[in-house]
Length: 74
Image 1: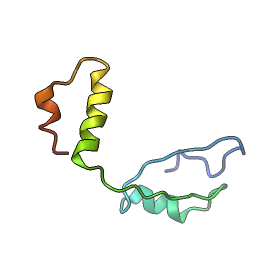
Image 2: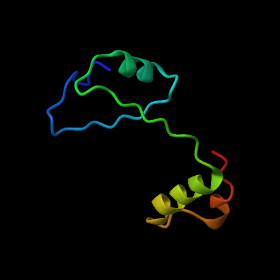
Image 3: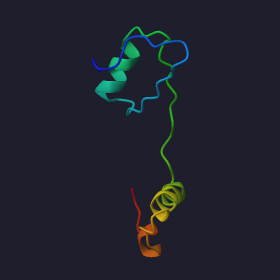
Image 4: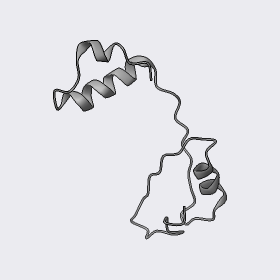
């Protein structure tokens, strides 16, 4: 994560997503950052939540079908 500055101005926030056991998560949690990293653990989404995300995101462009929504098993 060399591209990420070690500090940010007071009015800047950076949101980064990483899988808990990934190398990126390990690097972020071990580095000294100002302000410090605040991990927020988010659990897995259930099928209905995943379907709603797909429906909302792709539905804007009429790119999702009823059959597709109910075949999602991400």
